[in-house]
Image (cartoon, rainbow, N blue to C red):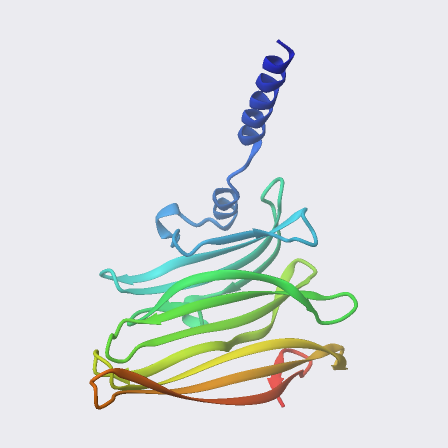
Length: 243
């Protein structure tokens, strides 16, 4: 009997907890006065900040222009909200006519919230947005991921790194075997040295050139050449520059 009561208590508690959950996206959209039909729901992202559970990062691409099913232009809404109420605490807005996201032949396929430890100063820890794009051509494959970094500043979010390419793949081939491809992947490492109050960022890049061809047995073989590079991103007082 006690086991049955315990099980019923757990079930009731779970149901009650779910009933108390809020639809953060809906609450945020109402605050921003965005209609549900103008939200690109497949691209919306949200993530509770692991080092501050009272806050949740929310990203809403707002459709401002659309042509058929392949061309979209978005306003960019990046927000930090109260996890329990959905109230907007910090906000970043980029209108579509001033650098907002575009999805066309190069398709904006995914937006990922990156909460890695980007500790830029003793007080400021940034979070990132990784935006993935895929090309629609099979003959000329193309993929790219860019990274933007944001810090919380009073009631707004400040973008300190703008769409920095961290991963790319492009090339051309005959759809069977023969072709050439270039791939690049970058790792960002926060340094102890600072410029204008923010840590320098070491970028380690791995570049791969891949050539594929058919041998005398008509088997597809690859030849890969790998190159390593380094660069430093420094803060100029407003945003990060290449040095």
